[in-house]
Image 1: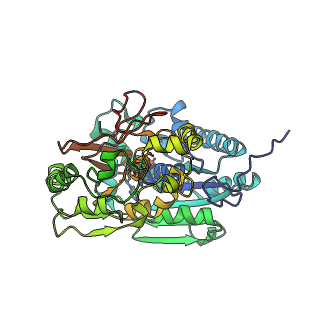
Image 2: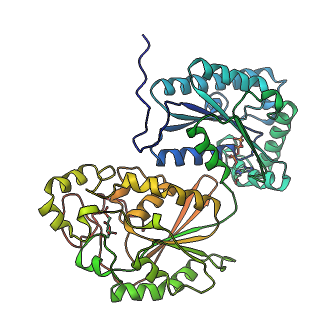
Length: 452
Ligand code: ATP
Ligand code: F6P
């Protein structure tokens, strides 16, 4: 019996998904960044509460053939062909099963390098009412391909225990084998919906994008770049309201907050790696405490104020202490503790709302290079959750101490984190479930702290 699919009319964050289910089919020779693009797309969509899953055909193939040599990938190798075909079958079958259970966007991560293979995937998806969006990454920059091989391929599970130089040579031979049969997406395939990204976005071709969700994915992928850069995150210095234990508002910095503002330029310099001592772009919110915190940074740092970086709007509870909120709105206080991510303050916002308004910030961050963001506790938790893949249930409870600079550096498959403490005392604004304490020490094990 065919089970009805769960309703997908909206994804719960006001994103109209029009009942679409999309298979994003990666296309491209090895070492063209397909897996990286797939991982980033999944992270972005999940952050937006859109159910997304990567199906990596290489992982299926590895169960039978964990360390195949380059000639395994020669189209003339019958055993190789059979095994690779079986891996693709298994991945597509699992993927379609996942769609039946209500999944929204699957990313099929494989080379999908022939027209016949792409046609087969499209037919399988068409039958299940799943849309296909082909994303081809083309790159003929030999230097970049070589550096990709050295950066990620020599440490791939395919080459565990292998000499890196021999692994790199073998991987180049693997690419040669793929090149013999590789067919780029061309006008014969103009009935397909596709995005072609050439040399990391130097040129982009978009064909037959059909709906809103597809265009969102395409827009995100068009904004990605792979230049080395970092993102610095800091809360504002301690504010008068932090000292009183009041939330929201537009208070000035406390004397200790002022001391942090004075220390910030030095802290930023201390965080620089070799050759990194160049001007940063600084983003603050429009609230006084972030602008004041950034005001001693060097003149040559461009500063931009974003309304989207303002603290979570606590509506009728703005300017209250947690104790006052519990007293005046006990049910709300309880409801927020039960589901902090989804709870929306009366006349204000939830964490879920904040994520939606931060989307343009994330898009701009993806396009940009070195950025220092001076913002607020809840906002920083949401931005941090995007980069570090924190769960929605956990992220609103993260401990984000004041007077601490966090440097995030995106790498091929993940984000490195470094933490720099200013050494200027400040109150704790972290609050555990149920508590109305003005200043509470974070409880280890109950929360994740992002300063370690
Ligand atoms: P394979 O087919 O072997 O799985 P792949 O195409 O999935 O290879 P990745 O493992 O994603 O390749 O390669 C990651 C490397 O590619 C990283 O070093 C990353 O910086 C780089 N990269 C990311 N995007 C692109 C792009 N659009 N073009 C070329 N290289 C890219
Ligand atoms: O207490 C500082 C503050 O930035 C408040 O302005 C804001 O309401 C609060 O943190 C957000 O943290 P939480 O979601 O834990 O209440």
